[in-house]
Image (tube, rainbow, N blue to C red; front, side, top):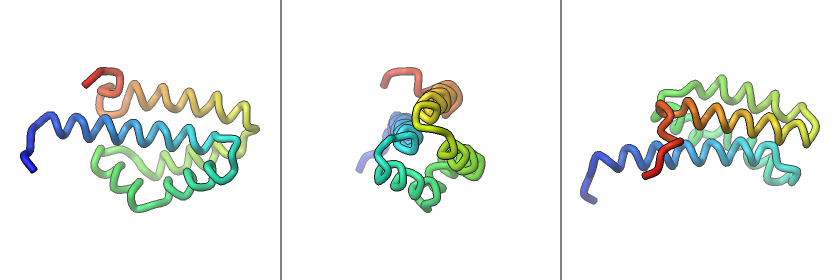
Length: 99
């Protein structure tokens, strides 16, 4: 594989998209999907993503655990707010730009 500097940016964008979808999945009304997303937030893959992007994995886990205590409608609204924060802050706001 030939390395190109834009590959780092693409990886960051993909990592951000994975993180945002996992947050949305936690808020899902489908119990199996929500449970799988919660498991992801405790996986080595998740902590590798956090390490790679220099973000606080433990803090995210705590927020996600608190998210599941809310009713479904509130969960979805809160998850949307979390996704907006990820958009603005993940990798210096790069998630708001196109490839």
